[in-house]
Image (cartoon, rainbow, N blue to C red):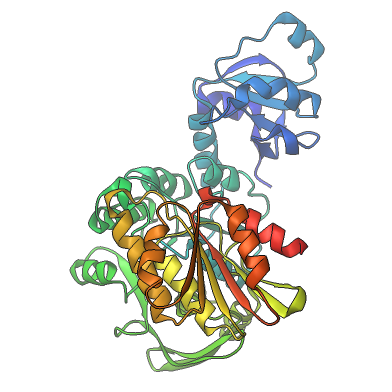
Length: 459
């Protein structure tokens, strides 16, 4: 285990030791006083909704042995009460967190796989981690820890791991640049370039630019894996002369291609063509986007020289992170497709396609607002409505002001109910769901659709 000491923190972060022992070792880092464990290192984060620095006393009371804070005056009473603990003051705790993660990463000569993209980051991360775990002890991003705070906290969890799989999210230009220069990936992946955050970035070309920032931290002789069927990535790669690239595809000729795709009740099978080699692959979920994910995992497995049998096993055994295309069975043999963590046009289309292909009686889509789309919002919501119709969904329920544009397109062809509150949608679902029905629940996270899922599970 490669440990960070208080002395390291002082040096790396230009910190000031208020009280404590320079040789104290920092093990688990946490920004949440509610989950602090005995002996943890607490770092106060000044966030959008609250200032974690103000809660350093709570962390000490809960058993933290080290606190890293900013802009807090420590009185003599606190110094006396916690004289057996360590308190460090830094100018900026978020910057300190990032510097510590950069240092921790430098201590490990291991494969680091970084995943970004407009849609499918989490599921791709999950399937890659499953494959890589067949050869290495893997640390991977948990939940939504994919930003300038979550990624450093993930890296600081490195212990005796032999590989790291991280997810990189962004809302604007420059954010992935920060993350990739902390993580220094040996393998980078871009799942696609779609329309997520287009309201902030202004165009898909700017989204491509933001995603390509991942290359800034890519280690020398590292490899980029891309979805070669994505129009912008395909075009970029035609001009690329600098980077090692592996393309995966279904439609376009690629380094790894999927053919003979067959969809069954709860799985996909396909043949992966890698040069003259063929692999028969089983993915334990349906939807073409998971075929792309699996091909990305095959690419990573090949780069890391993982045995083919182990690659296939890792793909077949992978499990999705909660709230991402999670299949939930409730009473009366009703199936819920829980994909309520986030939403954009690409992920909405994928979810609707999965609903259409899932065996069941009525197919019901509960769709809410896609956020951060700016002037593109009406157009993209209408495109979702067209996808609902194209996939022959039986009933559509929309929630939210923007989602009315989904309803306006679909109600010309199918049964549609429009609401503004989750409670109204829940009430309608209770009325219409019958034995064997399938329901997709999907919206941007800010719509709080997890409320709908939890209520249905209790019924």
